[in-house]
Figure (cartoon, rainbow, N blue to C red):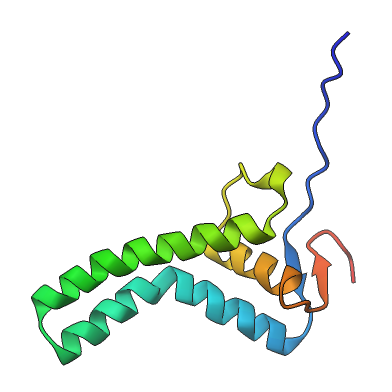
Length: 108
């Protein structure tokens, strides 16, 4: 007889404190828009050609950072699901920085 079951999925945590929410916002927006910000800064100080190279390199570096954060904080049974940058940041802040958090399904 097969014992097929669906493992319990832990919902994405939401921080309660304002400083934790700010950290989630900063880390999530850094993961999302960091490549463009780096390219714009390089374009401002140097040249468009260097900015394009910085865009490509920072895209690779941000992908590595995103995958390292994702693999270090999301439970192994849930790593096959796709998460947004803000969700990865929320997991990171709640697990590694030990902020008080609540689940999405909790009423209060």
